[in-house]
Length: 499
Image (cartoon, rainbow, N blue to C red; front, side, top):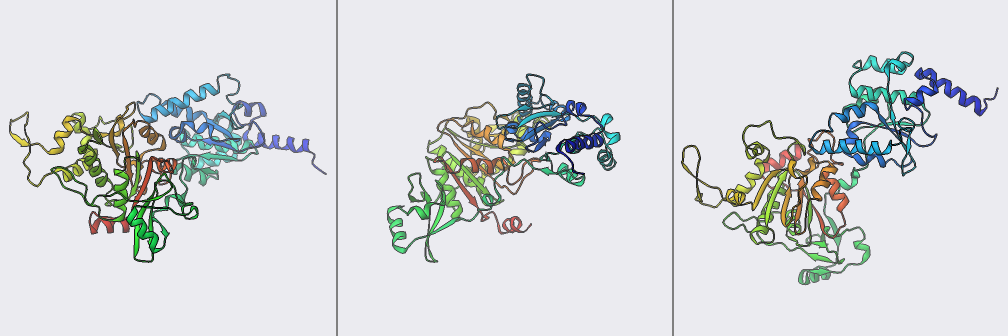
């Protein structure tokens, strides 16, 4: 007997009813019916919405499913005065706007890309008794009140209800493992991830020239190359010109399309402090970008001990003392941007000190004169005089700011040399917040090691540092340098490479 199309549809309906224990009306009320036969159904975990509130519009012709339990979890964060709280409130506003009509909450409302967004409801009392997959899932993960387990169960129920492909999107690695353990197709949110080959490009590109061209470049400081050799370069990219094995010279591609010589002094001079000398080619390129007045954004990758923070601070202090900038601001995330500092005793400055101590160490190294004589101050408790460190005077005057990144929201920062240390701990949304705070005359330097990630929902390809570099690559005002050679000590270099 040949099965007709109508028989096929009827059999699918019966199969869905048998699998879920729900009829078509109930499945529609719970959001378990796909709005169309084309496109995939993506169930979003809470961390994806908190990571990128704009993700609702990034799935094009596919169907976005928001479990009702995700709304309950977002409700826990909406009152936080942090980046996470702001993202939760934005998601609530966007969903309210989308579902303003009220009729499409579980049926799906159309998006600009041709897909839909809908809420999906998981009711264990209605579904679990007749669904073997759910019964098996809860034998493996018996905690039915855990939000992660309810989202996974909702995904299983949706898979059993429709013929369209169903994908769970989450940035939680543990949840990805649980999903795969019970047969759920799972993906990470990839919209803001850098391609692996882009992150792996650590070596400076080499361009072959003849000896006459290299000599002409050394004397004039400029070199016109044919379009073929420059096709793979972007503006402000650093390259190594080589004529044979031993004749090499670094260069930078200027916005005019010419290769230009680096403008790097022999030492960066700090008045009454220690001068800093570039120790390798990477540091020379970094200093060229830091001292270039036409470049207002510098990103730098480097493992521990390569000197990225110290060199950036030396260039910033040099610019302040030469009056190119009104001051130097050095900041870093407190574990993750937006965390409160109320768990440590003392004043705000004392609370932040443990998180910002590496910055003070670098300031002390650069600005401490050979003799420890300095201005005197009195301690308020016993009246004893003690030497005031040189950088402390500038901190009191506001010339140097050392602060946690948690308080940058809402600021406008004009004419400052702004160093953002440990920038790999930021999410792309947080990095955007920092970049958009920079006013005219300011220079933003973002440094970090993409391989050292403590943030639970970003990795080496999706953190704010690599995201900023990727999005700004090719702009006339942006430059990037990768430092690969450690200079802290032989022990530190071996530890970073081998451990």
